[in-house]
Length: 40
Image (tube, rainbow, N blue to C red):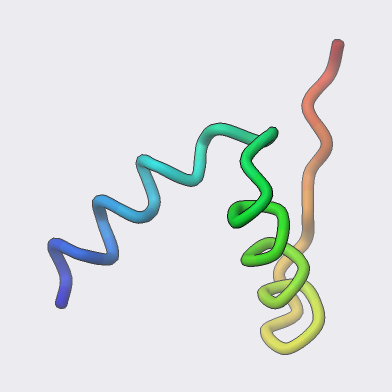
């Protein structure tokens, strides 16, 4: 379980992937985690 979480964390560093945007929205809505926009 910990390994799966770690791999998902590394995979989520691609901000353009749709599934990662959905996960970020869920974390923000239900967990109170801030979504930080990358500087361009």
